[in-house]
Length: 127
Image (cartoon, rainbow, N blue to C red; front, side, top):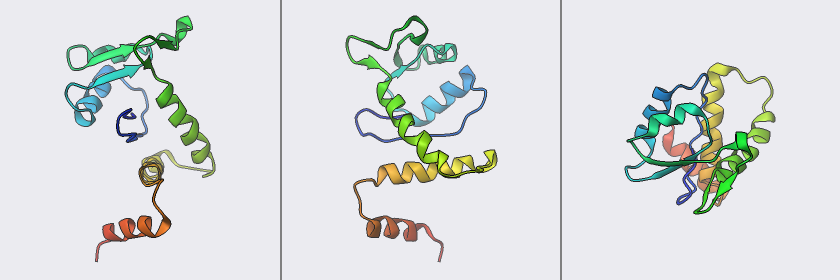
């Protein structure tokens, strides 16, 4: 998930995603009144009644519609995430969430210097 307003990124490993998973993640992470843009993956229908949502149908060659309806922002983020992740060879599925969390931290603090990042990390270390 990616917010177009704040550029906040949320990447979580998922496998065999169903409608209930999509609805649960949306309610947990997306503010009421937000508009969700997605592709034509059928389980996104679970968002009906929960959020305003718009889709593009990649299967029919549709990648954008008038009114800013597209998922190019999310696809662009993934095009950065995927090669970043490939630099870590031999990742176990059990630890994938840790790599996702590290990437999110780096993206959230991408305009910060190393000293600031170190300060944030050290603030989380138990004393």
